[in-house]
Image (cartoon, rainbow, N blue to C red; front, side, top):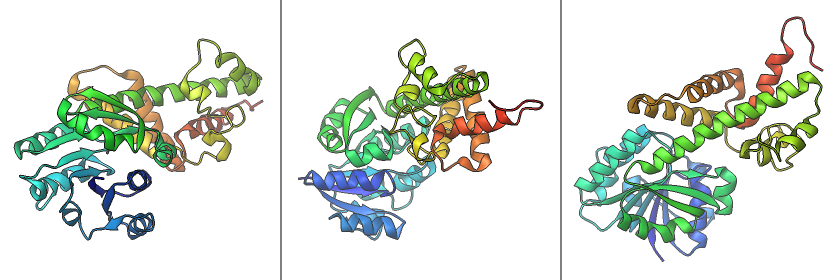
Length: 306
């Protein structure tokens, strides 16, 4: 049994903390949302009045926050986690998806304070958080990774040590750039099939076993019908929200600019998901790109959809 402080008990963090409780760990939780705190307490966790209080007796601190600015404030701010844990044998793990530069800066500050830290963003969405089947992409040194692995195993199925500090974030944004681009390609193909009079079922039958096969098609098909468990069959309820895909694509573009990498498809995907979000679909699953593209195609001058 390990004493864990869990900061950030939202849609992802809440179920992850619950799985740590199920594994027999003691989890002191903190969140700015009273409803999230109530759910954590109902699941058997203890509550803290602040992040500093949560980490007071912790052996491991785990955070799950929306953006890099929140991570900086939590760890580097006055009275933050690093100041509160300095000089103790505490392992810091940040599961947030943030920019690589922030992950490396915070890890460096932790190292200067004599603390081990990992960046450990996840893939698998809310469903994976609930089921405990997340994939963790972890950046940090070997010893910290070995110490964290049993804790991460209570929340995930696939745990990959990607490399040094920041490598977990790099793996996450590269993976999600692939996902964002491939989903748009699949959506475009179904829109074109509709316009050409080719049934969606036949396109799925062909492409799911041919060279067009990919996860966005066979596991997360953006049109209703072929994959019963996909969000397209639930009016695009997330899943993985469009706003989150847009965030990850923008993080990938920030990293690409910093690294001098040419990623034209990733850049265009970020533009398109920005337009989809602005169309009022930010909280829908990112596969709603099909609906958005289809509506735009239906509005083409001088033509009617089949």
